[in-house]
Image (cartoon, rainbow, N blue to C red; front, side, top):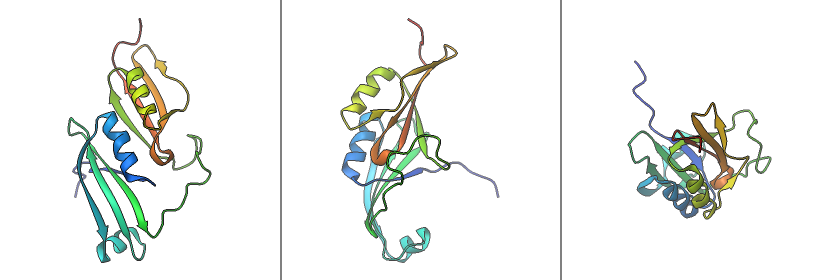
Length: 149
């Protein structure tokens, strides 16, 4: 058997509608929403009595999908520490290619996105930054466009 591809990245959120709005503003397209429960859900995540609202979003070029999940039962546990720094072992981040990184950052700020550091330039080839997005998730933005004025 060989790996056939990556299906999706999952993020547990505390407000599904707000998370969908954030990632839609970034440019992901909503494939659909559903509620998951029953033995399959319990068995696959190792919890009992799972009831979870999910939204599946896809990149416009079809390169990947993001599954947003809001646990209705059992209740989601808060991340500790709250708003952890980027160097926590196992920390998750999702990176997206964008055009016009400054504009994207401003649009995401209107949906609660918080710039972690600043927009940095790497070897005059890429502009890169991290925002704290829904549920404190690190969202990386990479702009491969022109970096110098």
